[in-house]
Length: 202
Image 1 (cartoon, rainbow, N blue to C red):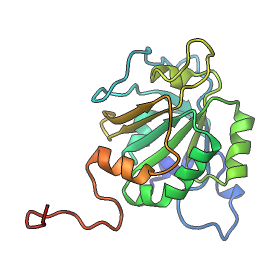
Image 2 (cartoon, rainbow, N blue to C red; image 1 turned 60 degrees about the vertical axis):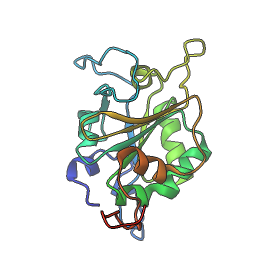
Image 3 (cartoon, rainbow, N blue to C red; image 1 turned 90 degrees about the vertical axis):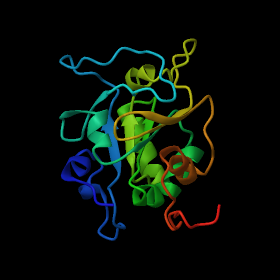
Image 4 (cartoon, helix red, strand yellow; image 1 turned 180 degrees about the horizontal axis):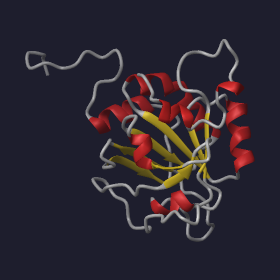
């Protein structure tokens, strides 16, 4: 899958941080979503359920420009994960190429400060979009914040390009299987799987 300059421009850990022998594909992406610009009006938090239109949250890209969820969705459907553990982050990294092959953009939202998110990206060798959301601005819009602790609730949303929620999970995240999950939610074949035809046996 090819990514437009808009996607590539969003990387804080851009090509200057990637060795020359880095495999093809998007660079490490680390984006500050933890602060809301005064001029930005975030969507109000409301229940986000299966079939709903996801809130078009804003985030600050590496080049300092404010962008929105719809800018990510311009690249393809999105697998949006809140509160992932290192195990989950690594699982998504293992599935990253196959997700991109399906046209699906993986995005992880961490409830940590910018520096901690950058450290996580570097230590785990993540090469997909990671948003820092230390104040829960993004997570709150998806009802992914625990009201008692203020921490992110582990949650997952598969969004089509029209921002419609095609699958969701709350309270726990799987340790593997993100390619199958996204493919089933979006009704598309997994990479390497022949597309079904009318003459195919059921």
